[in-house]
Image (tube, rainbow, N blue to C red):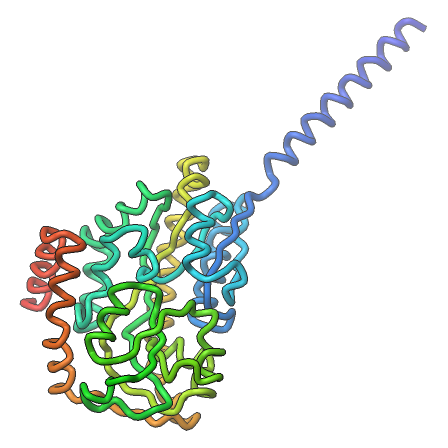
Length: 339
């Protein structure tokens, strides 16, 4: 009888032990959930890349990390998400570098009008030491930058008139990002620059609160601006990057392996996103024409007039980001162009 009681107790203790171990194991394999916010819709180049990012994180982590991509500014505009990351209330996002200038002044480098002549130059600078140096400045502000994605060269749309010369910008109510360089640049060109979050832009165009806006072809198409805009002028006035950001509070709590999974996955998504964006750009322009937008190229001579008009803006940017960083960037671009 005593033997039976002892056996029962042992069996019970083993079962409880296994149960506790099983519970602990279950907790160990519960995936780490990551909210990844972005501004465009799921069908956009941003949305497609976010899905690639999520799939890559799941695959590389063996299902231990789960990235939930949340688009259409459902978590708020870029500025709101940035603050959520800084406070640790959200884990990750991708958004414009331009809205970070108020947090890290060196980000204004990427807002320089006519800085890059083509995507090859942009890739080399953004993915090289200069891009990393600018990105690293975010950490003291509570953000970690992983990689730059591509938004693309920006172009002007509006309902007033085609922009064929500098004077056509005069008095145009143009929505620009909440960024002093963009505001100052377009005011210098004569426009009435109005800062608005991207999430409010379509409505502002539809109600004629603003005459126009400026964005890459892909965003103009995916956001259906052709429904509320008549003219598209190919100005290529700024190359606009996106940046994948992480909350530093949250990042510092990850293991080295978890950090590597996210960084490697972000690079895979970056390469996909850039190719996808560039493949789509030419098609997007053709689609916008087919949907009735009146498209014109800004003549090279007028683009040069705009460059000269903005010389003061460039001097202001160089003073703001630091002359050493500005000179290093110009030297790198000169070397790339010499090749």
